[in-house]
Image (cartoon, rainbow, N blue to C red; front, side, top):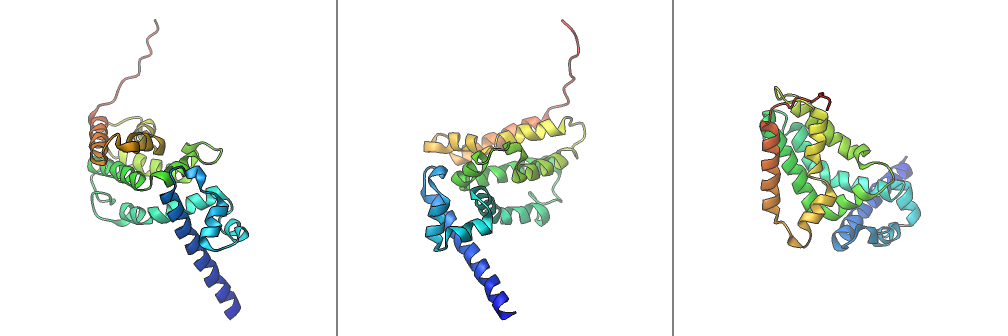
Length: 203
């Protein structure tokens, strides 16, 4: 039993060392693609086998690091006070949630970009995207008269995509506070607009 307990502690310690090393490497490198599993293993002082056993592959490591950074925000959304928490009126909560996503991606630009660009599947099927989409859609559906919740949610989240954030924020093109204000104005206009009737008229 003591041996098993020691092995578990070693695994936890190795995992924390890997996440810290990956965090530092992504922060230092301009291109996320420059960071390899071998680089992370060397920086963490563990073997590549340990890395692959713990995270599966590079995408698994990216997801784990992303989730670790996201945890405080997730807690604020699930159980925290307004404006992010569940007790917030929906018209206030939607812009606040979008602002939180934008700020998170601005603070984690290279990691977010690496995660959204990595893998062969659609970014819209990624777990972190589906989670935000489900949350925002459920909040939007609490607003009377607002239709097409699924599409509206996709459209709002598109404004926070990592590649767009990187394009706008790169080389100081758009200052952080201006980006936040633009997103808030966009979300407010979407929430204020009434339902649009679909045209079925033939030419």
